[in-house]
Image 1 (tube, one colour):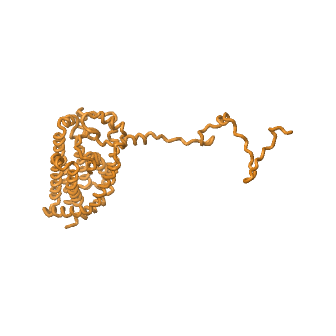
Image 2 (cartoon, rainbow, N blue to C red):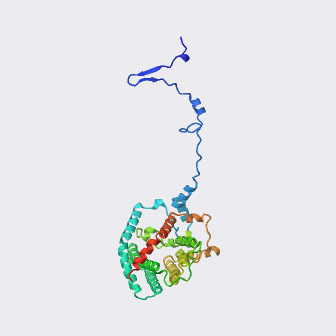
Image 3 (cartoon, rainbow, N blue to C red):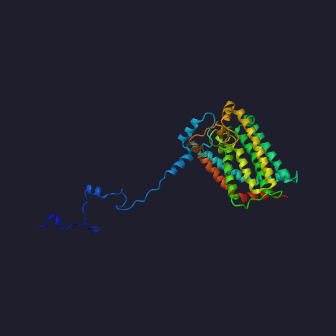
Length: 365
């Protein structure tokens, strides 16, 4: 009689599928553990691909999203003002942003109608004088008087009609006047002949582009809270303290100086130079006017902030009145500045469209 070890394998028959050979029993667990050198699901002997370090991306995303812990830490260190460009995703209301983009779409839909009114306004202004430089300065004066005048009336007007209603009326006056001024500048920027031309010099285009992009990071703080700008949230007067405010208390003025320098360098006409001098002069006035309104609104709190900030960039830092924190870069690593970058690049790419619109609006002569 044959021993069990030499016995032939048994055959199991199934009435439906036919014979199926018998499989030997699995090896003991100790043998499996000894032969398994890779995690479950990988072939033994296969080479694993080295994983790329993923430390930078999570750190960048955490900085841009300004998580609650980081935002609260910055806020807890503030003595007087508010965190500039603070954005905490968990505090955002989706319906508020839906309303914001709905308002933005409505403004875009009303643009053709507004363009007709702007064209009539520019025609009336051009009838005042045949000198385009004088007309440009007149446009700047009308815009500045309306913009700063309504800002000065804000406390009393909001007490009567409410913050949201006054913000809407402010936008209905300021936006068309600003658009008319910008498009008139684009349409007449080469008036008077060129005093100099550097457009063909290597590196000038790149320098102008970098300066223009840099200017937007200073111009943006005037609209730190887009939901308040669109009157989705109740508009408030803010006392910013961090970020760009540590460098200059009036970043919009600094941004305008940088922007004007770049465009004068690129265009080089008397019209462009006089226009940009007017823009910078108006922003200098806005520094005094803005400080006055903040002093009226916040009193001693603004005086304390004024002591450790400066109008001219880096002056308070050099004088020792402002000390930058060790992790100061985190105050710039905010999601709103990504929006600024996208907007600045988009504005650059849309220059041909803006020029066509300007030529169409000025094509009444």
